[in-house]
Image 1: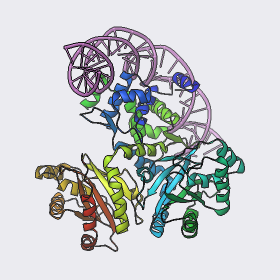
Image 2 (image 1 turned 90 degrees about the vertical axis):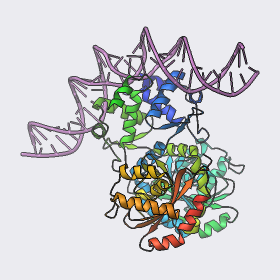
Image 3 (image 1 turned 90 degrees about the horizontal axis):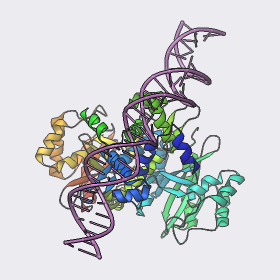
Length: 259
Length: 259
DNA sequence: ACATCTTGTATTATATTGTAATACAGCGTA
DNA sequence: TACGCTGTATTACAATATAATACAAGATGT
């Protein structure tokens, strides 16, 4: 794209660093161990470039190397970055005590999500029942239109913004029950706007009922959401609305960041 | 150091990437927002270098920029790295269901830590009572000699390794009660070896009692620890040993990674 | 209110540094 | 045994990062 060319001529853009970050980012949910040849495929770098950058990250301690297979893996340094981030995330710090209280009150899985582009990302996770590993892992991104957190955040935006998002933002089918019908998503968001919380079922994981409430800054801008995840074996949407939603809403409303 | 020089001549080491990572790493618990001049101080880079690398990371989305103060902050991309890491961490995935169960059984704060050099790092955190923010954040590093998790991991190593660590590894005084006496630490580790779990009080946070048990691979190598943190207002070490330790030990023993 | 210091931004000519090509060795496969 | 596919190591070359610099805009202090 034109962007890439413009960057190459920009003396303030260091292409070497970009290539290094491509290696760092090559690892993901389904790519946990990559050899040099794999890195070439995933990143699109030249073989010798991939060799140099991977080796550099290895020496810096960001990658570990299986001496037998000679494949690379992310090191614990990836986690340290999350720690640094969390201290810079004002909302996470503000919300943490309330999330802990909510987790105790409900004895259920509590998450906090923040919007990022067309996705939401989980910043705090407090699992209280066994589930998919990804659902207990921090840093997961899910399309905003699919996640109850994303929908409730959208519900606090203007009609225009909602319609634009519902029509254009990406959706991914996580389960057979994931709603692919954008009109139905719009209805769900508009209902959530009325109620003050959003309920969904089986959107990301097959057997889960979700309740999410928005966290809004002092000037009313939605900056995040609290999301409670319940096993659908024992919870219907109705029961969740009656017993859980009020607590989630109360917790979310008690968090009012100034910015 | 000689290392730095050797690296410069190594054609497989890309110094540009190293400098970029220095910028990424400049942010930490007490440095959450840094301007260009701050980055120069923290990283030791030239002003123009800091400018280029910070700008590159900004354009790549790793840093955000406060348009008023013109200072940089880590972006949510830092968290995504943690997500990628967790999928590559076999132990975390294996342990997660058991940690969730333990959290429910005890209704107390449960953590899982892994050894890394002379520190331990928290890989999973399940807070169940209000505490210091850092104590609920993933990716925190603590000197192994100070943390109960670190001590119980050490207790499963050879006498030689224990003595070496106790004599040479770093200690940091987190609270007035942090044990700075290395003999006392040795005693605590040896007692932990006997009992199969380690108890501490007020080592990292003033008002907490801690119980940790080791996770060992199938060939007996300690690869991590489960750590339960209790508010000392309601818990003594004795009560923790009676009521909590058996559960923590049982959970830890039920996790037996093959590697 | 003024002068001064500090900070962030932008530009340039230079050589340091990353580059791609290549050759080699170790493994598993055919 | 030969072949393809890895990961590793070394080169001569030029592309890219570099340090120096200049400027503008705030912040600081008197």
